[in-house]
Amino acid sequence: MKSSGKPRSRSPITPRPVTATYLRNSALHYVSQRAASIAMVRQILERRAKKRLAVRTLDAPTEALIEAAIAELAALGLVDDMRFAGGRAATLAGKGLARSRIAQGLRSKGVARETSEAAVGDDIDDLAQARRFVTRKRLGALRRGGMTLESRRKDLASLARAGFAYSVASRALDAPDET
Image 1 (cartoon, one colour):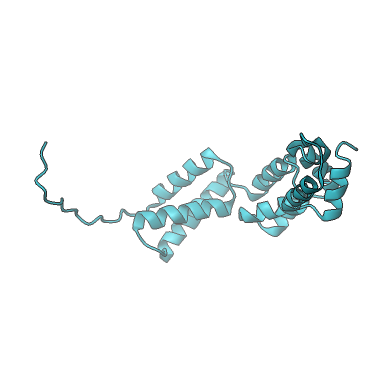
Image 2: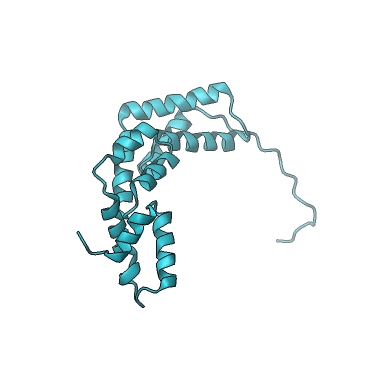
């Protein structure tokens, strides 16, 4: 098929309406794919509504529809910040992260400070977590070429990024397999 050389005229795209059904279905699809906090669901619904309406800020009726969809999911038990925080805290603890880093990770997902502190609890020992991190990442004496002064500095930096204090990190590097 030969082109005439003229550019095609495009009709302006008219924004489709954001309805309660659209928001509910979007939210259900999102939480069916992954665990989510209320803030995460709110963020995704706002982003989808802005895209669908082709606007930068949402009006009050659309905000009310989003809140209604979130309230419906919460009433059904599909979105629960405490349950999300508990599961996410267990996952991050399994990776060997420090208590402070776990709480920070939960707050970055929109979980309230009180909920994140309750989810982390007092049963996480930072030294045991640091040793788990050292073993998992093969740091310190577990490093393939052994530990050098430069590799120790890098390992301490890695442990600091995982949320551990210097004293805890150096103890974990010196004796990674002690219990």
